[in-house]
Length: 261
Ligand code: PLP
Image (cartoon, rainbow, N blue to C red; front, side, top):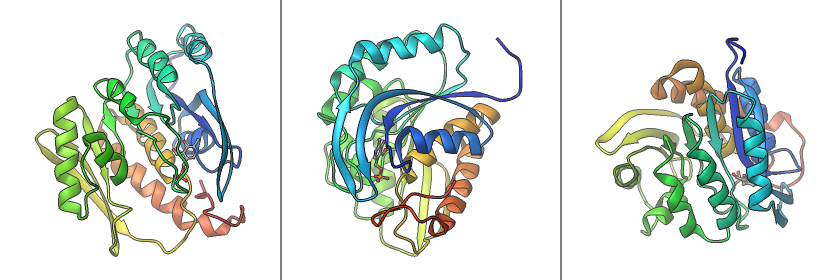
């Protein structure tokens, strides 16, 4: 085991061959934030900036084989979990998580911005939520996890985030990017209330593919380095803001293009 200053960050997620979301975004965000990125692939997707045309989940046994190969050899300093595809993959990941001691950022990926489903049955995610250090749902995922209608305002989103945090004894990152308004607020919420809130101006671009993957990976990487969720969130959000701000420098596809790491 090395004692170097660079932290080892594991992404457990799906592949986006167009490079904008999933493990490809995760590895770019981890590297850009100073971590050493590893990834266990849970599903292959065929997709581009316009949508997902096919999904091929990896079998639970092979997901577990990948996870065990890493944990048998490498110290894992933080874990980011993204697309899990189905109940079999979730069971494999959940069982393995009992054997490792590392903070977990769980992005409960359910449906892509394009409307394509990335998880067969949303109910099966419940079993993982208690193990998460931080859950990072967008507003639709937050509502879905609570089986409630989506929040229509930021105060309502914060209330739902607090409710989810209390239910699972974890922190929840409430993300306001899908609400209308000039500002994009994000808040770290515990079962007791808001711990910290950061806002930035809304950027005028359609190229926001992979923002959720990027933020959760940056958060895991920066927490591994600092041990402080609030400080990690402030830096991760600043990183994402820069990456969205630079997105239009890329020329990738004709749909919702990726952010620029
Ligand atoms: N594809 C994969 C593999 C993902 O993990 C995700 C989101 O986490 C997406 C697609 C959707 O990305 P977006 O909603 O930003 O387009």
